Image (cartoon, rainbow, N blue to C red; front, top):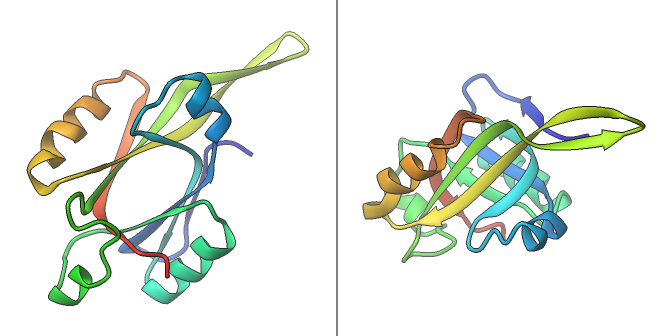
Amino acid sequence: MYGEYRENAQGGEYFVLFKRDVKAERWKSYGEMRLYDALCTFGDLSSARNFAMREMPAQLGKRAPYSDADRALLHDETRPYLVAVKHCGKFSSSCMGETERLTTYDARRCSAGDVESTMESMLAESTTSKAFVGLELKLF
């Protein structure tokens, strides 16, 4: 299933990108960006982390507000932010003469000073419908 989005908690502050499409990343020359087929949100870190561990490879992000304790959980201190955007129709799948527009998620790590420019460049595509920004946290 492509474009899966599940809201597990009302206004969940944690999000997990999963079902990474490594073959398409190589074929499309994605560079530093990652391509995922699904995103799920959670209200607590434990649930989000457990889910991400079951769905490897995955990326775990925490939306604002941030605390000092979150800094100890960072995946990468030089590029602590994770910007993810949802695309509707960036890619399509054809089978037996019928074409289906796929929903996918692009994700990129960046520094605090690059969050705005990273988001602007990622949102520039006409297929973008939603953005998620947060600190990228370690999975274990």
